[in-house]
Length: 472
Image (tube, helix red, strand yellow):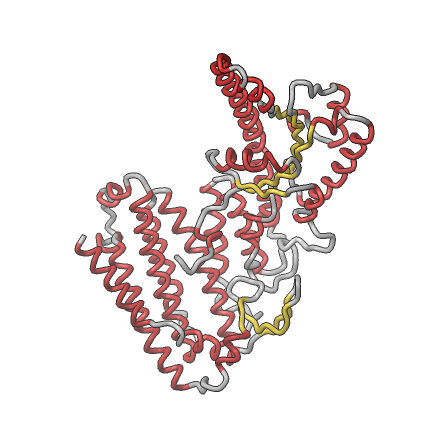
């Protein structure tokens, strides 16, 4: 699983943005991270940075754009780290109750915040009071709600009392130490109260945001409102991810499975890429979808279903070897399927409560006891890695790669979509110029990459791990 990016290996965590009153960001972030379920934060030091999360004017919704591939390779990472579900704008109370110039500045900042609503990002306004004297004018609060176009429950007063003056006076009067401790505890309890209140509001809005985003894409799936199979698979994938953000594992599993089955039907029909690269792309996405499905099944304690699903997955793709000169890619792919599933079983045995008891309680005639053990999958991963090594050596002897492969290997990078590769022509500050590869160039690149790895060491490590599990 180490080859997979972190955003694929772990369930997505909701993201919110904090802007303004940067001194409060660490406190709020720590509280939200400790919530169950946790919420991640994107801290923006001032309102000038709000453009980072605003939707670009000329950007196109990839759920409706014509398809050049299945899934943008950075889509999942972007939604986990750059596109918040909620923006929390923190203003000092002086902006609300101060002079007219401060109110005008507040209005300007609120207008600036409206740029995020093109993404359907929700908004919460927090008015920070740092001292008891910061009284809030009720008329101004009503005007603030209207100006921000928010329901009153999304305008939150946040009291942060400064105890420094009290500390200075108490330092001169040690007899008041008990009073100081009591005062400090009161300040802490008030802070916890406001943090919990803010956390509750954010949890509701986070759920609403990802539910609405999922429903928006799901409507297209239900109506089959797309002009290509790639687009349909992409929509199913996105609905599943949005469901994971909401921790709706049942809906996530359903749509990952729908995407997987639709992808399998595309084998032999899609002609968008050259034959070898097209099969590599399909199998790469199938691998990621299978990983998501297996993870959800195992974490839900559905061990039999996970093992049967893995068996079906391998049966579906085992014979899709592809072109003779690229057979080493197939056996490498198949070896990785067994390796990852072994690691999933191993991880689940440690993290899922009662996993060992669940395995002992399985009496399914469709499964052997051996198929429930990681050792079985480590052993087969080693076997298919041996097949990969043999085919790679044959391919290396057939292709004249010594003079050309090094240049190709240096210039080939993952393309914009999962499972695709391209030659890097030019890299600018924001954009890169890419050139599609021919199948011959892709094979030369793959052979050069394959020779970089010591398959013998990997085979020995896999067999050793299988042996250790047998002895355990």
